[in-house]
Length: 74
Length: 388
Image: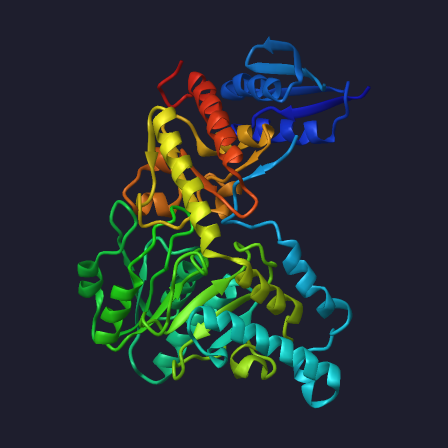
């Protein structure tokens, strides 16, 4: 199991989702992807998109303006 | 996850029959046509090239010697617009060109380049469906007009122009008429013995043919300067070694299109348009409802961005595009949607679905359901209003 970190701090929509999609393509079953960002809309649409693909959103953490979404690849 | 590919205006899956037709010209008859004077393999290559030329030209009701192979639509339109404008300016016929404001980039940017070189260019406005008005065109002609370039159908919204009427007007003004038929060739009839058009851009990348090959129909006696220096290939109009496999593949791709296929595409298009407009609230069809290519449906989904829709659809296994293919890496507003009177929101919310040979009614049903769900979910988080 590998943890892949995706840093999208300061990036706006659609970049965080594009980068998350790239990471998912590289990941294997059981891998963890941690996406960090600041764009509010991306925080909502990334979980929506990855769950539609059947992956699991383990956690959404927030610290100030920064959020972190932790995804487990199915 | 199986891919449902609905971006057939950008590129198509090549038909195996096309690949089979091309194959011998990679491995057996690999000479170029210019070698016909030297050895037999060259003669075979030249025969294949000429047969492909005749076959493609016959679909337009033109002659083989009126068709020049190029590397694709971009080169064909560059050759048509720049080559013709330069030849006519050299002959001191005038320096004014008319293009529609919603042309694809090869024509639009060729016109912009010519403008920098001192040509006068009129960018014609279109109506809300994308059609060029005959009055607007008539008003645009001046004594200096030498060339009109108006596409047969639009790359994004699929609107099909009345090129017969436009051609007649050009003839009345003794002006050369070029049309970009990239998105209509074999899909919408174009007979050069009936339609007074002098130059026609053609390609097969939307017809399940290979990429990297295109053609320009050039009516006999049409003034045209070469735009690329080199050898004397293609009747001394287009320099460069001939792409024999490409030309053979192009001809085979054209042969494989049938009227039945076009009818099937139309049915899928109509179902797509009718269901999207009926089942997804706050939607708007872009382009003309009936005067459109058989394969194109383009819909704006208000309060959401087309970029987001395409990304979410991709993650569910659907390939569609927002605006023209060129926009997928930019958030520039589509000049086509803006040209038909749309605002930035309408342009950004537009999604193009283009069907092809390998799509089925099941694909259409599946994409409608996916779009409906994605749009509904995105609207709940949309910063553009109309939330949840």
